[in-house]
Length: 222
Ligand code: TIU
Image 1 (cartoon, rainbow, N blue to C red):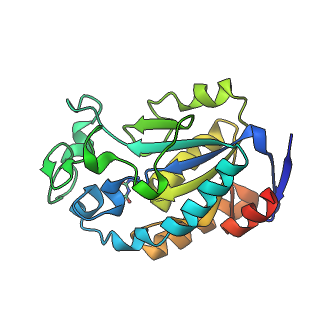
Image 2 (spheres, rainbow, N blue to C red):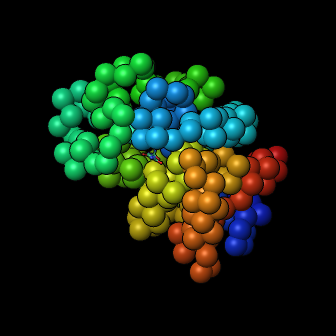
């Protein structure tokens, strides 16, 4: 297979293309566009739109090489049976999970707000995981899908850095995967939280994983 050496932080990230999946976390309208879950929580969603071009460039380059792509969506069943009341009732959002909003019911599978944005829409052969939690492994089939394909390494993009991306990377780390987060293909509603998350992931000799600008991976792909 094609071995890659990516000049990452805090040191080189080595992986084999055929044993690596590109995992795109929650690039759905709920978080990126006005009127969705992100905005109901009081956030300015325009910050997140900035990563779309770099994320799309990376996705296209990865597809070109035939790499496995996994998309996730934070999504609940229409009956909310997979949404703990603690999650639905937390805080003081303008709309709660399951309430009707301008893009359909907030964070519910099948609604227009729950679709991945057009620029990054999944194509045939790519895996789409609906997840009820912040982490991509909790209560999903992701681990067995990766095992069936003998995947050992994960490259992460998506939102938000310190919530669903970091949670998923921590879950992956405890399951034995090496994970690389692309710094310019992830964003937070809180710039200071993004910076802190990147630092804590790669601290202590990559205690959770690696980070790198996407151009380092593009260079390794050739
Ligand atoms: N996808 C994800 O990160 N879900 C969140 O709720 N993120 C927030 O930052 N709120």
